[in-house]
Length: 101
Picture 1 (tube, rainbow, N blue to C red):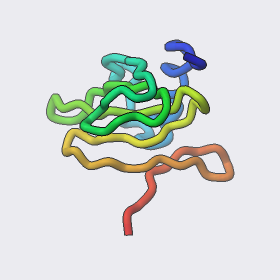
Picture 2: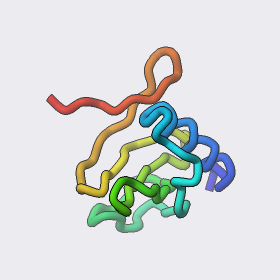
Picture 3: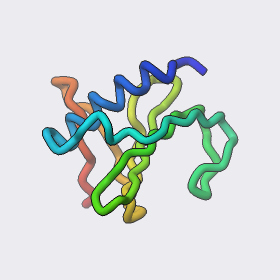
Picture 4: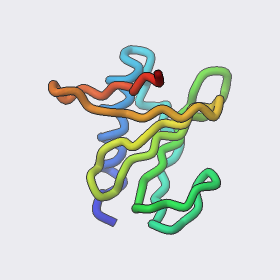
């Protein structure tokens, strides 16, 4: 484990504020879990260690933000609708969702 739970929480707040702006509240974070490489997560075997952050969403649903333990950067967000979106960082250091073609 490279990152700490506290660092991941700080990073989560930064990522989600970039993605959701004023709609994001720090109280949206429900749980932070660490998953080791080779664990199974959402029917997929992990190829690296990750942190999974459970976030309150609309209509009492839950979103899952996945952050790399190695880099501390977001990998993707899985919405309550099971939609998976990749997250990238622009040249100004702001996070955004990658649009599917």
